[in-house]
Length: 99
Image 1 (tube, one colour):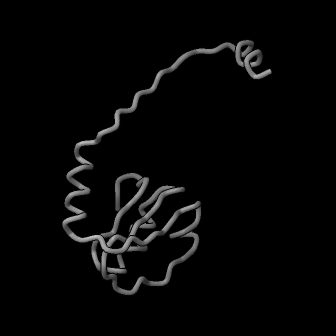
Image 2 (cartoon, helix red, strand yellow; image 1 turned 90 degrees about the horizontal axis):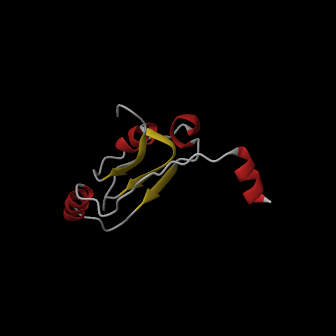
């Protein structure tokens, strides 16, 4: 299991038994993608353990091992930068701007 809930997971292995594990490892609102060309049977899912809290299960077809390798190579070198700016706003300024 992951040390903390995951935002998403991709299952490239053709092993259906990994799908419930991937779903259980994700946070509420997360997406699990099955990205293989072939997949064995997926065991029965328990709604509360695997799909509740807006979890999403999707399948993608025609992904190859090379696609997975290229995806992970790109993942190591993100192209987007994010920053956070904090500012303090008084209650009066918030109320005045919303009217």
